Amino acid sequence: MSNVIQECDKANKQGAILRIIFTFISFYLFSKLNSKFVKKYFLLLLAFLLYVLDQVDYGWERLVGPDGDMCAKQISYQLPDKIVDSMSYLMLFLFFDFNSTSFTILLLFFTFWRVIGVALFAWKKQGIYLITNFDLIKELMVYFYFLGNDYRYLPFLIGGKILFEILVFKGDFNK
Image 1 (cartoon, rainbow, N blue to C red):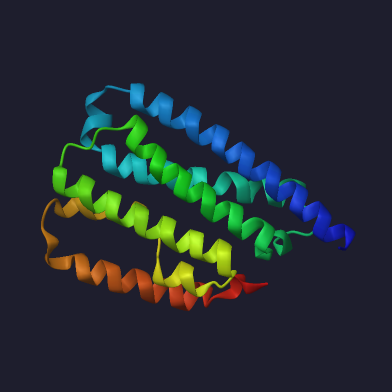
Image 2 (cartoon, rainbow, N blue to C red):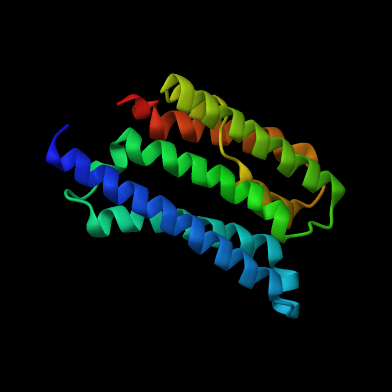
């Protein structure tokens, strides 16, 4: 294994650990906020928080990794990143009570849908599982904030997400 790859692996592991710690602390602090603003914009703020937390490991890898974006293309980044994503989504249910039963059921379904895809990706090392078992959690939060329990447009959200995954990632995580 080349020295650059070893440095990437080290940076990627550190980034994953940092992200788990940041996620736990952030979820704990966010769950304690009780203002009208937080209550009104809860799903939007939570989706934004998840997005920001998703940048922690990538930012760390860019900061201490040896070669810019190269480390993020390695399986040593992609696999832990997807596992930590899934852990973050599971942690949502430890820290937050979602008022809508239908939203909670959909959130659970798509969380476990993603966990299955990540497990298959870990086992087979084929990026296609990340496309077929797409990550819809943040988008689902934004959807429910604006449309509530109106499911008429949910198929379009799902189709759009699958198309996005195909166009952006194209299964590049096989390396």
